[in-house]
Length: 230
Image 1 (cartoon, one colour):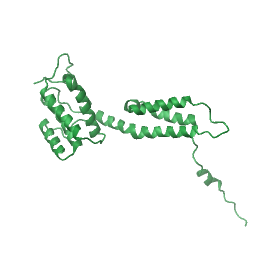
Image 2: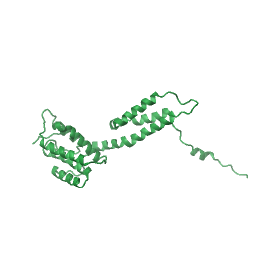
Image 3: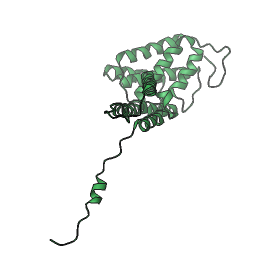
Image 4: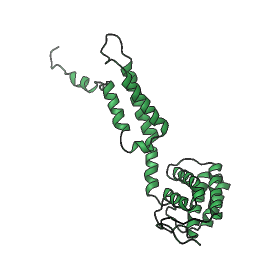
């Protein structure tokens, strides 16, 4: 049974499992991921609190896992760190994507020719069909287009929902919080592909009607972005 002896070491090296990180390595991975500068603003409050609680608990642990008995803390720490990373990817990054799109996209999209009444009509038709996301989007566009038609704000390409809400809120002060809320719903539906409800549509439609009945207050306001009101 002579012959060349086969070398089995190479396959074994390929099949060698990855090294499991220790406690410090797992903490460093999680810290590096969640400390990236883009995360704090987009991170929901509950995740931020969970992360602080986790780090406090981690700091409170004693021992380095070198005792004679089994140490269950290290696998638990690794599992929790990985879970936090998964939450960051699943929950936070989609929010970042929405913010990036909303910060650069024009409210009206490619079609900028419709007037406020046309947007209201489209919104009502979408609502009749139960298409609440489309109804919300067009109803918010009607709010902004109406303000442009009234010469409350100037007609400007590239205006975002947040910018429109901010400008309108300075002259329609009583509606500021509702404008901000409507802009958030618009962004979430338009860029985050989230759902909308009849209540969302009704709230923005009522906001549209209320703003039409209000007189803008320009006293003491900066003129940039505003027009002369009719």
